[in-house]
Image (cartoon, rainbow, N blue to C red; front, side):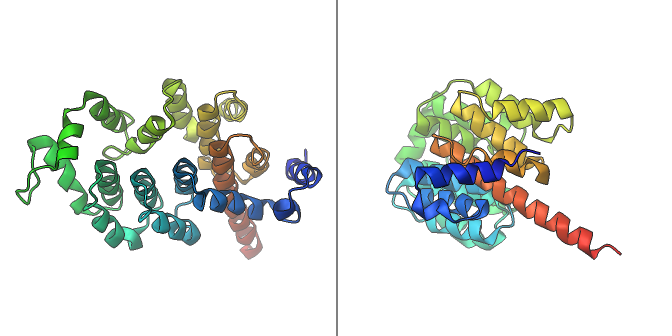
Length: 276
């Protein structure tokens, strides 16, 4: 069995990265996510908080996402709202309801989507507005919302979520990420990788592992997220091997995935100890 994790640590040691040198992979993974979380660059904060969505039920991930839902940048707030929905963060419903009042339409839609994912019907308000042109309260849409509703490109991106077959507009998070990165290449392959996450076939797993090293960084991100969703603790070393990727989005996806699979491995160990 290849000692991928130890190999990665050896590389870190050689490069002289003092903060990471003596840490276990789980510590390195959290450092990657928290460094992105506190970055002065909005795009890096978006990437980090989006990666946290792989960790449903993780209180630390929820706390980090809640901090960014009040970020100064609207796209960061939107990404944080979407992540809270993915994290099943019921405790965050009051924050998300407050986000529905945000002046930025991206945040409004993101908060709506998250609330619907959490089973809160207040998330339907903005979709009602899109349908009939005003809110249930009788208020008309603000100017930015009017522009969005009339913008075919923006509406197409929102509809992408419906086509993906998830909760209403759940794909909007990935679509928004594509807009921010100004890169539309390869969305079909990315969606294919996402769809294959739960395919138990060994050949599919091998293909996902190969895709995690593709030259297209978006495909690497999607493949790493798909591998994490498989929930197989054996894949933790594969995720760890990508913690040193030269792309921040890939590092964050690998970090969150490694934390998720490490938790699955620990649960597996605890369960085996409990058996007679």
